[in-house]
Image (cartoon, rainbow, N blue to C red; front, side):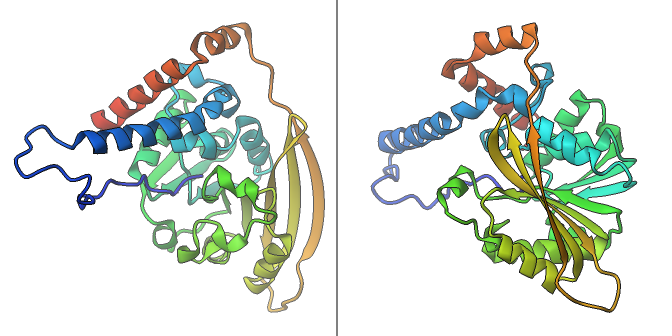
Amino acid sequence: MAQLVDAQITLGLPAALAPTADSTSGPSTEYRSSKAETQESTLNQTFKYWKLRFSLFSRFDEGIMLDEASMYSVCPEVLAQHIAKRCTSFGTVLDPFCGAGGNVIQLALICDHVIAIDLDPKKIALAKKNAEVYGVAHRIDFRVGNSFSVATNLRVDAVVTSPPWGGPGYERRAKFDARDLCGRDTGGMAAIIRMARAVAPRVVLHVPKNIDKDQCLQIAMDEGFSQIQYESVSIDKKPNCLNLYLTRNDTHTRGIPVQSTKLLQLDNPSLNRQQKMERLRTENKFMYKTYLNKVARFFEKNHL
């Protein structure tokens, strides 16, 4: 679900952190210390997702590559499988925010052809690598670019995607504002729906469990959809997300979309013996750091 470009360190450092004019040893000790503390803080925040990695990809130990942001943004496999099964009648499907590939891999196992777009070339590299692990890379057309412009001339059977939510902090809100999907500067959920409606008659969105449903209904009506189904998903008995299934209104009549609600309980499959042993062996921060260093080398190898 990520069209979130990794933050880059700017060259204009504050004077207190800038190296002296005669320095030949690189950044100052203070700057290196600050950067190390930031990296350690991020690692601590994402470590819990490392422990859940086999729920993200059941074949994780076969070569799956995820950076830290993808650890918390990729769609759990049991959920991606469910969404894909609801798309069996679709020939060509577009995911305009493919991230590390959780959704497009499962779609490629069912649909004839999948188009995967992401703004971040690193995410596309991860998605390709992960699709290779599942043997479906040849069925996916990977494209780097801004989906709001790249998708303009496409025509597909459905748009199926998990737009960026802005990180795990969404849970602290009483209601998630639909305008924050993919960022307000892009136009939020309305812009996503508008883009999707132009290329497909059906749209499937994986969104935060606490998103404002009234906003969703208003946007669906404003953008010309005749039906909207809310699918409230729990995984292992814990509320996880909301899936929206929208059908485009191709008539000249406009009105309030027909609404329906469905409750869905999914369960992560039990780990096999080999997976349990692998998780026990690697369930510490040292092994997580080792894995992230492996991902960093993967990016370097691919000049990213």
